[in-house]
Image (cartoon, rainbow, N blue to C red):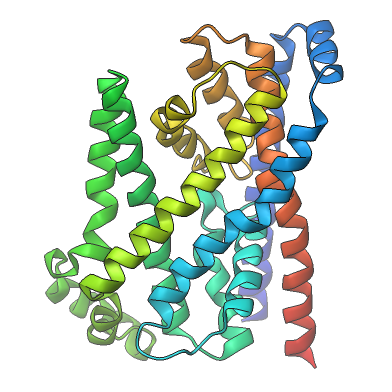
Length: 313
C-alpha cells in the first residue's frame, strides 16, 4: 500500500511539473511576441484604484458559489455551515493549481470529508455543483455570443451546456443499469442507487442553484471588466460574457496550472478580433488570473494545512 502511495505521489508530482513547464512555455511565447517596452509603459499607466476595487470584490464573488453548493448539499437538512463551505471553496481553488482541468473544485470533497465526516454527500454535491456552474456559464455565453453574431461560439456553448446539464438536470437519462453493474467491481465503495438519489434534485433546488451560479459568474466577469478598465481596454461588459465560455474552456486545459498561459493566449486571440492590442490583452488576463485565482489559492493552502493539522490532532 505504501509503495502504491509513493508511486501515486511521484506520478502527481510529474504531472504538476509538466503543467508548470507548459504554462511557463505558453507565457514565455506570449511575452516574446509582445512589445516589452509597451508592456512596461502600459503597466506603469494602470489605474490601481480599479485593481484595488477588483481585489476587494473577489471575496464577494465566492459567496454565490458557496450558496449554490449549500443549496445542493443542505437541500434536505443543514449538514454543513456556510463558513465551512466557504473555506472548502477556497481549498478547491488552491487544488485547481495541483489538478488538471480545474478538478480541484471536485477534489475539495476529500477535505470536506475530513472536516465534516460526510463522504459521498461531499463528492456528489461537489460534482453537481461543478456541472451546474459550467452549464450556467455556457448557457449565458451562448445567449451573449448569439446577440453579438458570434454563431460559432454560440453553437459550441450550446452543445457544451447540454452536455453539462445531463447529470444535474436529467439524471434519469444516465445508463443506471450499466452504472450498477460497474459499481459491483468496487464492492461497497460505490452505491449506484444511493448515488442516483443524491444526484436527483428538486425543481426548486435546480432553479436556486442556477440563479446563484448566474450571480457568481456575473460578479466574476465584472471583476474581469473592471480589470479591463484598469488598463484602459475598451471592451463592453456584454462582450465579456460573449467570450466567457471560451475563456473558461482555456482555463480547463489539463496541460496547464489552472489554465495559466492558455487563458492568456485565448484572451489575446479573442480581443484581437475587436482591435485590442495584444499587450493590453495579456496584462488584463494575467492580472485577472492573479486576482481571482492566485490570491484565493494562497489562502486555500492555509485552509488545507489547517484541515490536515486538525485531522492529525
